[in-house]
Length: 155
View (cartoon, rainbow, N blue to C red):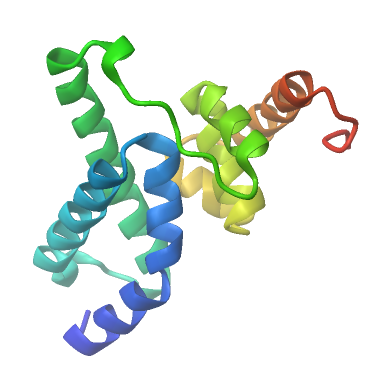
C-alpha cells in the first residue's frame, strides 16, 4: 500500500480507532497508547496488506490485538480495584452499561451499531463466524436492556 493512501485511510478512521480503544481500555492514556502502537505496527507492515479495501478491518484487528496485549500486561501489574472509574459523558449511562458487558458482547456491538460495520465485516475483524457475531449482538442487546431497564434495545 502506498504511503499517501495509507495515511489518508488512517486519518479517515481515527475517530473509529479511538472509540474501539475506549471500549477496551478505561484510561484515556492507555487508549491513546494503544492507538499509537497499532498505527506504528500497521505502518511498518503496510506493504503486507494485499487488498487496500480491507485496510480498516486490518488496522482495527491490529488495534484489538494491541488492546488485548495491554490488558494482559495490566492484569499482571495493576489490581482491578485500583482502576479509576470511567468518566461520564453525554451518554454516560449507555457508556457505563457498555463497559459492564463482557468484551465478547461489547466489541461486536460497538463495531456494528456505533461504527456501522455490517455483520460480515465485524466477523472478519473479530475472526469469528458471522453467526457468532449475530448471536453476540442479540445477547449483548439483551444484556444492555437488562442493565438499562429500557425497551429501546428490543428488536
